[in-house]
Each structure stands twice: as C-alpha cells, then as structure tokens.
Image (cartoon, rainbow, N blue to C red; front, side, top):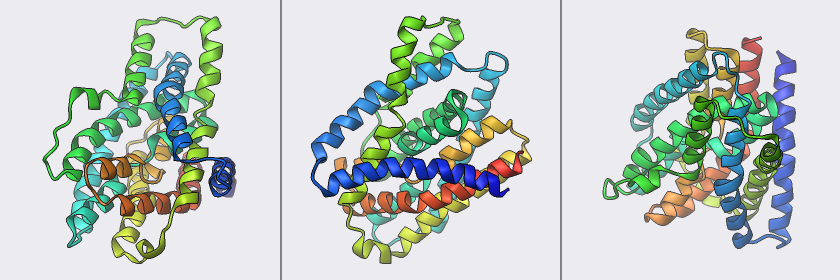
Length: 308
C-alpha cells in the first residue's frame, strides 16, 4: 500500500515542482497577469483540445466506449451526491460566501490539476476516461454553477455550454466513433502540443499561489468545511461507490484523480464576472490547491492500493 502512496505522491510532487517555476516567476515579476491569461488561453483553446484528440486516438477499441459511458454516468451520479450534501452542510449568513464555499466543494479542477496527473499516472487512456468526467463537469458548471453564482438571474447559453474543453471532447469523440485515424504527420505535432497540458497549467497555478493573500480567509469556518468536503469526503464517498460497483480499475483511477482535485478556477472566474465574492473565491481555490498536494496523494494512492 505504501508503494501506491509513494507512486502518486511522487507524481504530485513533480507537478508542484513545475508549479514552483510559476511561483518564483510571480515573486520575481518575470510573470504577470497578462502572461497567465495568454497561457490559459493557449491551454483552453489549443493544448487541451489537442490532448483530447490524441487521447481518443489511443483509446482502447475493445470496450473503450463502454468505459467512457460508465465514466460519464458515474460523473453524473457523483455530482448528484455532492450538490445536495453541500446544501445541507454548508450554510452561511452571507449568500455570496455561501455560494463560493458550495461551488468550490462541488466543482473540481478537472483540467489544470486532474489532466496532468491522469496523463502522468495512466497515460492517454486516463485522459480518455477522465474527459468523460470533464464533459459532465462543464455542463454542471455552466448550468448549476452559473445559476448559483448569479442567484438565478443569468441563464446559460449554447455558446457558454460549448466550452473549448467540451468541444475538444466532442471533436475527439466524433473521430473515435467514425473510426477516422489521424495521420502520423499530424499526430506528432498534436502530441507535442497536447503534452504542454502537463507543465503549463502547473506554472499558472504556481503564479496564482505567488499572488494569493490568504490572511483572514483561513479563519472562516466555511473554508475548512469546503476543504474537507472537496479534498477528503467526496473522494472517499466516490471511491466507496466505485468499489461497490466493481468499476474497471483504469476508469476508477481516472475518476478518482478528477474527484480528488482541488476547486476549479472557474469558481473564481464566475465570481469575478458575475459579482460574486471574488477575493474569497480566489483564496479558497488557492487554499484547496495547497492542501491537495497531500490529499490527492492520499486518496488516489488509497484507490491504487485497494484496486491492485
């Protein structure tokens, strides 16, 4: 069992060492907000869709689609558990704070944190199954998440639902189902661009950590409740559920990585854009990310140990 913890811990440590580059660049002013916006756009609109295509091209033809559908169904079920639990457990007098803590408990960082670890531990097949969770995440974020942060005033549009990550999954899935194989001449540059999804998001996260001022936020009870739910309770419940259902090991591990990830940056993006508590959301995402260096190793390592 210890070997499993060390295997995951080593991968997580390697990711955070990449993040240290962004942290140092932020502290020394080698990076600024504009550079992180450029990196984020590169990741969202180019690198992540490229990685999806590569992952689906390498997906197992025997039972691959069945596993993808199972992963998507489990993602829906896991979110259906998380949403009512957060409404029961997290209660704040300030509605804006309550919304931030609830959303940060439900929406995990399926892109910037989960994707690099899925690739590092499981390869492209992990990204393939993880993309099913990512697709459900996008739908939940742009419907329920948007409704929560705006108090029901903003309605999701088709353009918002069709995010770059979701479009990448749709395009890759269409190629996979049609049996179209991307020629090697294109696959090599696609693979190189897709591989940037490992270091670039960690550099962006490192920069965000360098700019964070946690301060008084750490004294808020809601922060610790959301941290406990996001990083320990929901991953543990998801693991128990998947073990009880005897889910395929690769599918289980890909989903566990996604469920164990810290809060998604989209929580902060929503808060900034729609008048939520942006300072609190930023500090919450950063706090979750810091603790996830330990908790992801524990939860994913436990999943690996129990499925050997």
